[in-house]
Image (cartoon, rainbow, N blue to C red; front, side, top):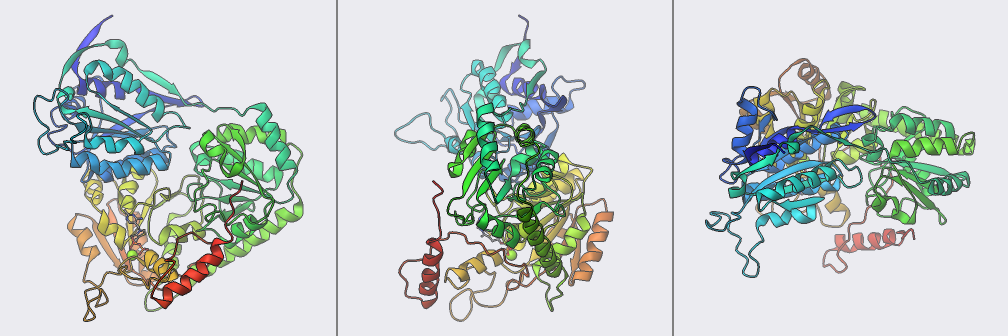
Length: 627
Ligand SMILES: Cc1ncc(C[n+]2csc(CCOP(=O)(O)OP(=O)(O)O)c2C)c(N)n1
Ligand SMILES: [Mg+2]
């Protein structure tokens, strides 16, 4: 056995550079690069290894390095990258120890919740304990081996701490297994004590050979397939709910063919939107709390609901109220058994594409009642008219948000990718946005993390440099984390950012009002004479802020100006932010009629809260356990 003497950091980088994924005969590099912010916890270990990998001519295990501004943001960028590549490739993220590391915890949770692979490499405290972990001593009196990095455990799908060099091969192989397993994937964290990173070891060369991880298309079990086919055949009003798994499995053609052959309408979750063109007659659009009136009405009547690649989030089921038929039954095609058994459904554990193809074969020559298919098509057509009206309304003096989305939708066309995450836009986008190509709708709504938008958009563009990427960001989200605009400028990664400024949290303001809390604390105002935050609007100039970061900025005041600004931004090869002010009290999107469980105070001195509580109790009574 030949060996090579390298540090743990150098060995790790060389190993990562040699990992490949394969599906349907197509090979990908698993880790395409490494984001990092250096501190004493990683500068001399992983940092030195990345320096060698990036700069030594012909170095084995070359690994591009990207500098980030904020550790949370770099994890978001890696997550956006992985989603755009349908989980076949991702990026690694290295941080120092302590605050740099824990800044990544939110990013880890987001990646895990969205079932997206990212590899996190936080520095950790000395394995030897000879030196104390300066600046980062948690010092629990009852436990010597807990560091702040233990906070990654519940938000990672795999966690290991490499206390000794000999552990590294096993930790790396386990890490990559989870990253490339479609049922288990999410954040994978390898915590690296700072002394161990720099320690040398004689590694077997076998560790660094190119390794191919075959991403399976797990076929369904025959008996389960027969059970689900039987259930579908018994349906009078069947409905498909398509989730993100349809996109990750590249099953969009299989979904379209299945829907065409069977006549079953298709509703879509946030992650599943763009799994079908929105002008397809079988497409009923968004379902659930942020759904369309069409899909939600179909859901209220459906007797058999077939989930494909969905984890049935609370938004999708409208807090278990959207499926209204008293005898409704579920089937769930999912690669993860955790998700396949939800809603007491018949589980069909399989890859989405393999499962849909098998179902199509099993149900050959069967189609559902044409009246039901026709009813779905006319409800969907009516909703498309409502979108047209919302996009075309012209409010004055300030435009409504829906009008802004309409113009961005037009600029994005079939191929541009829209990126968003939190605020009032995800709901409006889910209901309104017209989708063309698969994967062009990138709304992070598993965690709905403010600050994901720009960072995630950066990762999306890195993964799809040939596509125009439109980042929609609210003023609240912008203020939380606009940092990676600097990274985009530094790397010449072109984004079109549309900053929708409504002076605060329109979404939570509306929610607050609906639960009787009177928009308390949700707009950006000075403290007024009443002693409350009800004075004039804060003079925050986000356009000037973006310009100060090196971004080209265009200010639009009307919908026509927005259209012109977007045309200019698309033409430019520089990062461009278009700023537009909208009316926080008029978002202009038609209602999809669904509910969402946000508990209201059971006792209150305020009339507004008491009235909201009464309404809440009525809605709450509609909740179903689906047992
Ligand atoms: C990190 C984080 N903190 C808090 C929230 C709760 N939250 C959801 S939307 C929102 C306000 C978003 O404001 P903005 O980006 O301006 O969008 P708008 O609501 O005005 O559309 C808040 C505070 C969140 N989703 N993420
Ligand atoms: Mg806002």
